[in-house]
Length: 196
Image 1 (cartoon, rainbow, N blue to C red):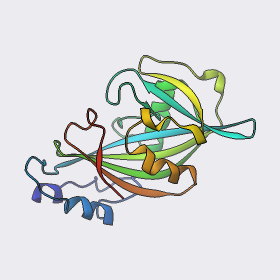
Image 2: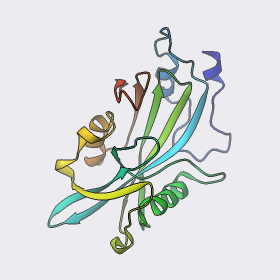
Image 3: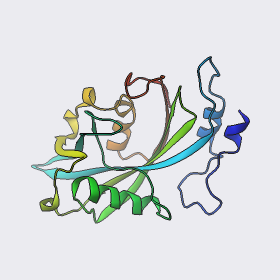
């Protein structure tokens, strides 16, 4: 438990929520079962959800992951921070790299925390809503194959398990934070044990 207490964002952090927020306290108190790794570090990521209007309907652009974490699942666009990047800078860069789009409107909407029963790392994901981009720039990359979906017909059965819990909040325009504790094997079992 002591190792987690030392895991803090840098003093000059520009991140939206601090590690003394109530959600972090709940993570610190998670059940210590045999095989549950102690929490020791926090790694930051971004996730960008791109929206458009078509024929009076709202659509969400998802990428079919072709390699890496989440392979064969649909997801938004994003990834790890580069040194010195703000969350917004990382979100814009990752979106360009993964699907070619450069959103002119980008708004921070949520913070998702992910823990895995067989890992001591907390994944802190900053979720952005994006719109107003040149759709002609949309491309398939080595990592992602982009595809538009009506927001009322998202392929939850081919997405991460947690998406079905928090995506409706995002679609309703709610700013929120949530925590998902995945069973050992994470991606392979695709089962979150705790969500709030």
